[in-house]
Structure formats: C-alpha cells, structure tokens
Length: 204
Image 1 (cartoon, rainbow, N blue to C red):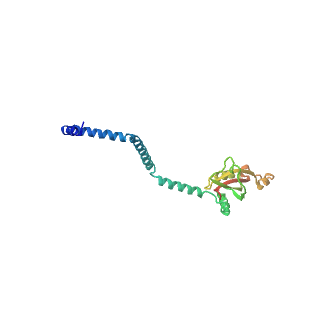
Image 2 (image 1 turned 120 degrees about the vertical axis):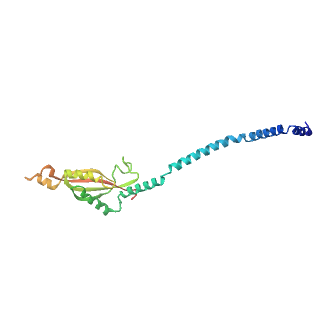
Image 3 (image 1 turned 90 degrees about the vertical axis):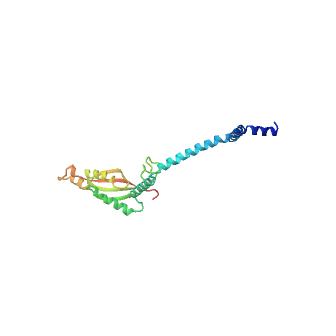
C-alpha cells in the first residue's frame, strides 16, 4: 500500500486508526518496560517491609529514654554498694559499725591478702565484672548472738558474703567451765572468726 492510499484510509476511518495507534503504543510500552516491572515490584516490597520495621521500632522506642534513665539509676546503686580497695580505713570502719547488728563485740578486723579460690580466675565462681577483697572479722558473743550477727551481716548494703565461720569457746567460758560458777549454755560466750568477701570495681 502506497503513501496516498494510507492517507486515504486515515481520512475515511479516523477513529479506528487512532484506536489502532493507541493500542500499538501501549503494546510497545508494555514490551519495553516488561523486563523492569519484576525488580521494581520486588524493590517496592522491600521498601514496604523496611517501612514496617521502622514503624515498629518507632512504636517500641516509646518510653525508651525513661528505661535508659532507670538503668543508669540501677548502675549507680550497684556502684554505690561496691567497696573501694584504696579506702582501707573506711572499709575497716565499715566493719566495726556492723557491731550494732547484734549483741556481739567486734574484737578485730583484718584485711586478708590474696583471693578467694572460688572467685579467682578459673575458679568455679570466677568473677567476670568485679574484683573482690577478703576480710577476717573476730567477734565475741553467745552462740545465738553470733548466729544472728552472721545472718544479718549478709543483709547490709554492701556486696558482702560470709565464706567461712569458725567458733571456739572464749577465755571466760573456758575459765568458768573449770570452776563452780559455770554458766548455763545460753550464757556461754564464744569467739568467732568470720571470713567475708566483698566486691570491688574491676581493676581497683
């Protein structure tokens, strides 16, 4: 079909010709963009997924600042309960003040060099976040008073635990045991050596 014939057809059927051209253009566009639609759709899915994650994180972040402040307060509480290895006089006075926990007499407080084998490196309860100090407390009192003191000493504000306890009769008890004025068992006094471990900051 020559050029004049094509022009004559267009003039005679303008609407049909226009529809044909629109359809042809649509087919060409679909053909050209068809290979891009799949990755674009996949990217759209990824973006929608990322948006959902961001929205979820935004919802979960509500109150996050308050939670952080609470955690910081807890850290301060923990640090406040740790012993300072350099403050020897303060540490010693701390133990003498424990005398008021029960009707006992604090006879001595001694720092013990070295480490507790259970808490040291490769020990069964090796400390990861803290170091520790050892102290021996010498106290005198009746057996019930000593037991009461040991129970209460682990409830003080410091991170402190009793690791061993040795009790022997006091000199007055041994003296009375050989005389005529022996006291009943409830009134007998004893000497106790109490080994305690306290936590300190790592590397202090």
